[in-house]
Image (cartoon, rainbow, N blue to C red; front, side, top):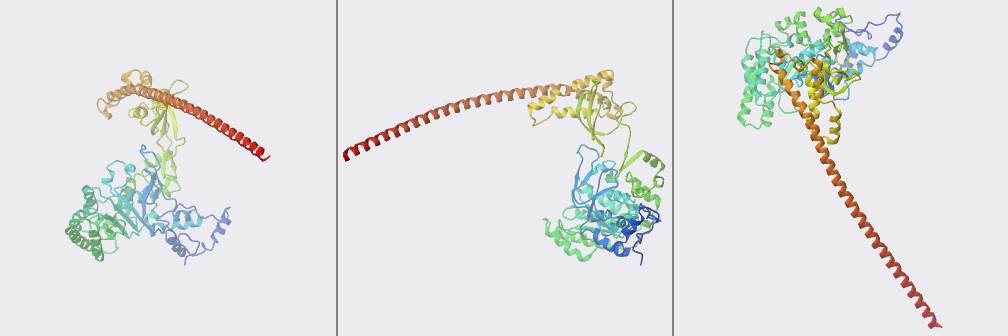
Length: 582
């Protein structure tokens, strides 16, 4: 049995290099502390026993839904729900976990160095858990362009495999891809991907790196009418040759159907599940019995096709051929990550893989460990004085001490400190960026549900768009130059369109101020009217109060007079009684 202090059991260091710093030698200052830590009773257990305990500790009783943190990042979130922590106007969103409790594997890795070494050399977390991905992906902002998911339908899975280290990639066993179809076009794309596309996608070379993979499941919703379309379209392709490189010919591929919402997915290809799947389908479907029997026939035919292509767990030769450095590197590069899995473990920058040009460009970048992306410190302004940093919006315009127009912008850069800054307006007056200035003014022009007096004062204190246009016209040398737009990119006559927008905004600005002033005057009149009515009501109340007080005083006088009369009569009667007694 291996020694309890050997953390590399079951690994191949030559094939999967490690990023862990070597154990300190006897002359190292921390060697004694390291030896004390390794004398812990748990660490003294054999590594095989510790790995069994680790597997129970890091296993999760539900599928792990994987989501990208942000564009070009090599970090992911685990959980069914994520929160967008960036403004919707940002071109690159940042997602954060909505679940408060961290994964046990993270807590264990941060406990001590020996735990980290065990879990790094033997990433059992990836072996005992099931990773689930969605298609079409919910957030398309991380894709290179809007139609990229049509070309690579397993983009999220491919990015995940490219982002993790090769050692973790080799440990993955179970992968689920859940599909949410929006129309018949989506089912056609799925059919081409799984059944008909003879070209291997980027996912196939990366899946070839998963040496221990047992199951790649596609989960289909059965509560949609497209469920039968997928089965029908797939049956013809299911009878084709099994030596064609496509997902359907992978021995570990499974097709599952979510028979009931929230229920356990049922795997096609298992004859024992046909009756149960058909019954759930009939029970949860409002269609007639003929549809139920039709789907049952399709399910039976589909199961036969699944059985026909099963050849045990051996890997086809075409799938083994994809496990070569060139194809794997091509698939990794296609994901567009700043730092992929192979480069995450390279201690020396010269040992990183990839084209020489990309390694050269990475020298002037800073790695953001919190987001898993590279930040390049570029100058804020170009040689022509144009702003080069990306920003989200303009939040203010002012005149500086030199009477130069400046605007406050919110930077569109993760973790940039400070988050905002003042830049010259002329630095933004380029093709496309002046739209942020118009958006800043239009926000005030078209504001609704505002306090009219405050909004009027705010607009009066702001620099008007006409003044901005006048200053930029003088600065650029004339009205023709201020709207000199590259029409080869923006279209013919685009400069005149922008000019008209500024002219319209210049007319709307004083009109909105006048509108607000009218509202303020009307509100003032209404306020004065209410004040007069209040004062009148107050006078009436005071008059009624005085009348009431006068009546109260009269009542008190009458009461006192009555009491005095009664007292006098009592005394007189008493005197008479005494006289009679004598």
